[in-house]
Image (cartoon, rainbow, N blue to C red):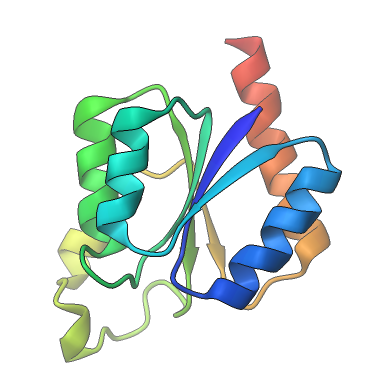
Length: 132
């Protein structure tokens, strides 16, 4: 099963890609939101792993675009800040907007996380896809 990992943390992406590959997944990586959307237009994926804080185009905008164009994709959102915490000015997203956008995600995982738990979440999404 092919996945797209959109996150600007190169070290995290490398580690997750290795672990996911060992589990039998094929992983492409985009280090910013614009590249992630370009990959989505050029290639086919079953699962998207999406960080919220990205250069170029933030994860909120990427998620909104994904849901407008490809509703069948499963999206796991990674958040570096506990959801519901007071947002920082530089996030540029209101609390209401955050809740609305995150309701479009299939799963949300807060960083830091245990890799084993993360892999289990990806496998759960993969099982949902296989049932469809």
